[in-house]
Length: 302
Image (tube, rainbow, N blue to C red):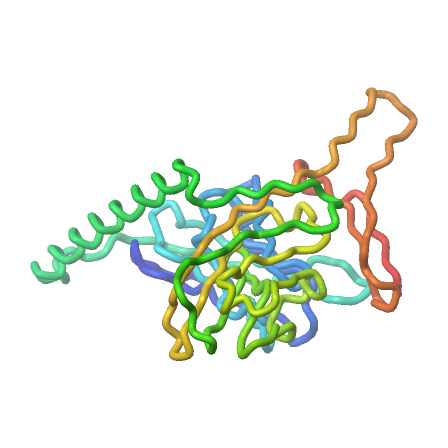
């Protein structure tokens, strides 16, 4: 399939898989050998092996992938985005074979300047200057340490993600904790938690203090942190009308185990203990060599 895009627009790369439970979706570009464009695994977006040129620029059109919709949205297209994109899917079940379901060649062209009136060109310049200003401000904020940095060792019982405010908050406000803007971590609304709205990766792993809107302490306790929790968490407070009242970021770094072994040793133990309950039923455990992008060991319990 051939698709044309204009620089600066958001473009959908349409792709539909079979309408059955999906385990893994991976978008790649054929000319990029290191890293993926976007990867979905274990009911969540996995950006650990994402190519840096696509960071915060790609999303799934439907994160729930209803009816097998695994279409990719490419944000703010550039000339460097031209190329052939492929999507592979692994379905749930014993057969773990990858299925190539889409191959799309994207052509990128510059916008026709003669179609823009003079006022639109002037507005575009102003918007670019505003964007640059915002970007510089954000960089300064990050360098000055305004975003809290929290570190914890993998395997600890819990870690606290701080979020406090001096402002009075309405009693009917909604509090959302998000991970990387694409995964719901925790929701508090109408005086109680909303576990049904959180991503299952955080099920039974999050807790807020009692009456957080009155105390203005919206901090989140995250139990059993792992390397997969490293990244940016965002605390967002909405009014009853849906207006954003405040937003605060927390950067979490989970330190993983460091194991050393001499070359030629007979074996080495890579420690990992899980807190998952026994009644889960079907479970798959994968050991992956992230650096070399390969699966080391797979264990299935059916």
